[in-house]
Length: 108
Image (cartoon, rainbow, N blue to C red; front, side, top):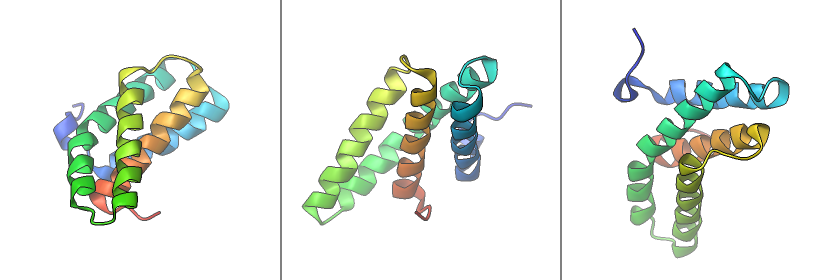
């Protein structure tokens, strides 16, 4: 049975991120790449609100600005996944990775 977004774990998101990087290098088009791009967009949308709460709680204004810029960029990527398929896989992957760091304390 396929997982719902609510059942997706940070480990699942990281796995999709890593898969996206492999696909970007080897096969950035096709049904597998499309499915991973779609899932990464879903992960980003799921992580936006917790990331915004994290940013709001930061005391350091510069750090908060950096996190907010990353959130804005991730939101834009999730809304428009056009362009170079390999580049989009890499960008979506990194956006998920950073949002996970902000929301789940994933190590760097």
